[in-house]
Amino acid sequence: MLLQQQKIQLSAYSDLYDLIVPKDNLLRKINELIDFSFIYDELASKYCSNNGRNAESPVRMFKYLLLKTIYTVSDVDVVDRSRFDMSFKYFLEMTPKEDVINPSSLTKFRKLRLKDTDLLNLLIGKTVAIAIEKGIVRSKSIIVDATHTLSKSNPFSAVQVLKERSRILRRAIYAVDQDWKERMPKKNEDDDLQNEITYCKELEKVIGSDPTLGLIPAVKEKLNLLKETVADTQDNYIVSTDKDARTGHKSADSSFFGYKTHIAMTEERIITAAVVTSGEKGDGPELPELLKISQENGIKVDTIIGDGAYSGKENLKLTSLQGIKVVAKLNPSITQGFRKDQDKFDYNKDADMFVCPAGHMAIRKAKQGRKNVGENQVLTFYFDVEKCKTCPLKDGCYKPGAKTKSYSVSIKSNLHQEQIIFQETDYYKDKAKHRYKIEAKNGELKNVHGYGRATAYGIEKMQMQGAIAIFTVNLKRILKLGM
Image (cartoon, rainbow, N blue to C red; front, side, top):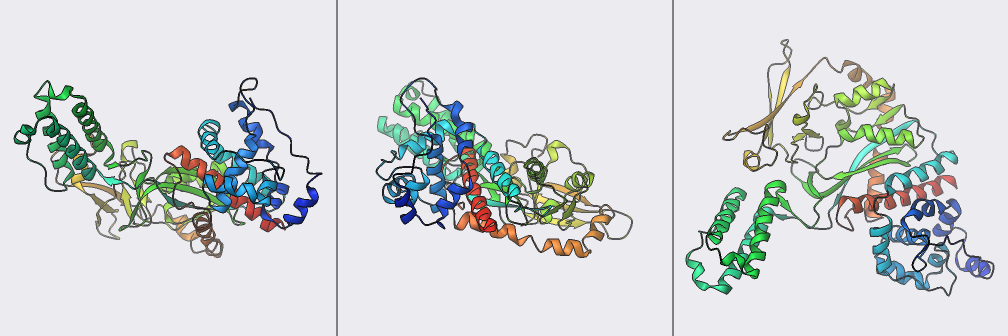
């Protein structure tokens, strides 16, 4: 049962808190800046109103999570520090003698109370509203970029996992009958994924030939796990505890396993919108959503500043309809015409390569056609055909038996003349100088508030982590500019 808890009466302790927690203390300034009752209003429906024991205030629970992000500490450490740190007690609206929660309560709060809550948009919207109210946001430009976050779980290659699980299965069988060693198919000795899948299926077939062996619990359990892994491997290629994380690319030669947070930010460095995706997603396709959310949060936009990933034809069409200028360099690889849904290959500006819908990057590219002879040149991107052979999306994309898989785009030299002219203006050059600000903001999120690695598994938890981290940096920025 939840009873709305009012702020504690500090009369008996105000002198003590004033002595110990100075006026310029960050937590005191945050408490004075924002009324956290909006958290109660958002989460009250998640609690039973007339049954059970009194629940801890959702506002206080949220503040515990905020302290975790501000100081980059664990659940256990944030609770332990709240026992003796008077600034923490003041921020949590506790009396000096009041006891703290059990750290496990924070896990339950995240799972039960914050689940299915659009915390990301709620918290960003709240801070943007405060920034607008205080007159901090004066520019009409948003700067866009994406930052990557490593998954909490390191991925294992599919071949490694299949080899390990087939080994465990064989060991369970030999524990039943050593004679089975003579009946096993020849093990795959290389690291080729398709060869390992073929071996595992042969192993399944051999075991299935004995109707009694597969009924033994120890064997049945390991066999079912191997079958499940084979099926999952054919779908995902990467096996990890974090089912939502994917492999993304920072450049042609480097990759990461995790998530991307696509961010829009004003020139005053107030984040106005964020979208969390798995790591393989392209940057450009998220621009319409970032623009929409920023506008819904009250930001008037006349200019978007970004890198070459955002200068695609569809983005330029969208912004031109709204009279918005795009300060992003054109790249011939993304100035292509209409693409069918099944052909939506994303352009990765860091690697200057396309990524297929399954998340695999092209391994090389070649330009075809002659320049200035009345014909469009074509850029052709080539993919690793060995991955295509086992890809779950190969139907309609890869022709069985084909020795190559490529994707071509036309370089339409006359399509973006207005944008090319705009790129030479003083306005474009002046606005482009602001792009570094979002890179610094991404660095703050990672280096100061632990956003370089996910703290839990799954995209919902990543969105929650992003919500509180962005809420924190926005509050700190508002306090700095509002002084």
